[in-house]
Length: 380
Image 1 (cartoon, helix red, strand yellow):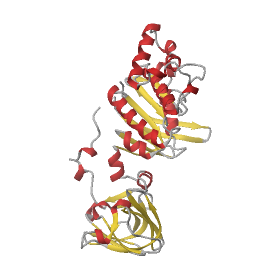
Image 2: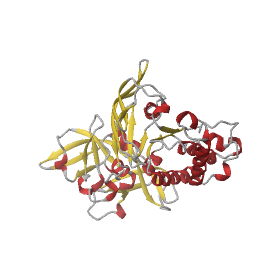
Image 3: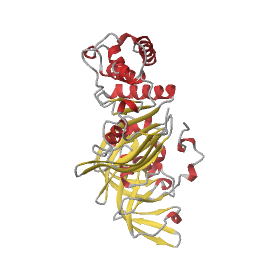
Image 4: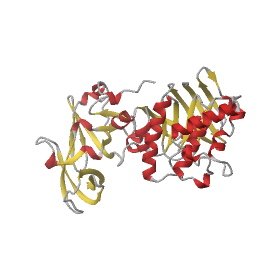
């Protein structure tokens, strides 16, 4: 498989810039996920890599080849589309074979052998004689993946391949895709708007916003150390709580001052400068009922507006002053709208963003967690 180098990649449609000068190094055999909201440029980026969209500016290299001007069939890539793009009049085997003659000089017998091998890997031998209308959504997806496999490409590209499946099947297919990647040691680029897919599948995740890269990191690093407010609110469900605060300083100490509470920030020397205001970030699971917190924890009051039983936990919507917070409590907690709660925060899990949306403080650092394997990028 091949590594990919993206240097200043830009795509403009008339006056609209869909992808705005992104730089990225993708390792051979890596599973890289592009995630972001609709219209952020993730599918356009994938289509430029595939050769389905022209490149306005920048350079794209697959392995040691510049491929900007190469036709898709010359790039040795294979793409799985959101709608699977299967021909309705062809059987599964015929769909998987289609196009092989135009991109290779393999004999019919060799192509048949590849189809049978791909079908065994995907556990779909019994689907080879069926047409798409006779297949379920998950079965059609497996045939589409099989069509990509038989080409033995340098790079697999998958554009939201699970979005048409029901929730249960999406979970099953996520696990199957991950297992398939591990078995094939393929370089895989995957596009999704679903941050759960991004977190569970990617060796690294690229968060895109308005055609630009916000952050590239392993999933757990994105979650624990977001570099921007956008990443903090996009990665994680429910999203990170973000509230405006004033910042005060006393020697080496710092405090966030909100209309309804004040919190001391540990390790305040990590502020590279001392802004007067910003936004405090706290994930819902890092806020708890004061009764469950250590005796010396900093506490504040919040009024409950709505509760959502999630089965394994209770999601509480509450107000602190004029700002809404979401917190997770134990399932079956006797908490109702109108209750006033005493809350505490995990002081080792606080974040501060400046008014421009950049992270300027985390209670803990990546370096402090460097010995934990979940923070390391898997080797190719």
